[in-house]
Length: 110
Length: 121
Image (cartoon, rainbow over all chains, first blue to last red; front, side, top):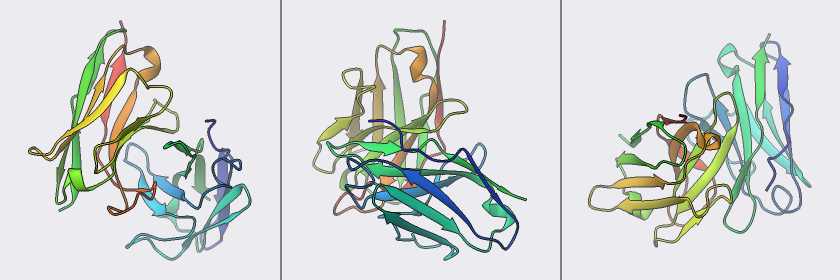
């Protein structure tokens, strides 16, 4: 399976909203509602932010939201804060008991 | 506290083997879907393997036939036996728990701190 496609970078000013896309195929993103988003700060382990397209784990601020349309999933971060600056990865179940990740998006808070 | 702690990484020569361990606390490894995910230096995440509560195991094509995932229920520990290692296996290896214990959700809510594996002569 090929990696899901994410933009390499995204940016926004504090308080603004930013949306990161994650494009796959009908064999992964478009075929299953098992899309997740992870936040990773430098030299830290990833942190689950969104699962099953739009569900937030306990403790994740509601500024983070997820959606999906066709083969593209999206993560929206509203009310950007300095601590949101990190790398973000999407992932999706890809059938045949396999998971695929996106290449990652570096989010910069200007 | 629910946590995972990896160990066993290090420098290994091409063609060599290494076994990684992932000790869990605060929950039972055998009751959960447990995964290994790796990240090459400066690169993105790559799913490696999963072991189901029932014991079934599955692998990414890139490691199939070379890596073996297993667990020791008495030690509440997950393992990854890595054989025939190549430079392309150089990465930080994370163990991670699926968010749901009853039915796999392909989302990982608990991660270890990672252990670095370097394959080089």
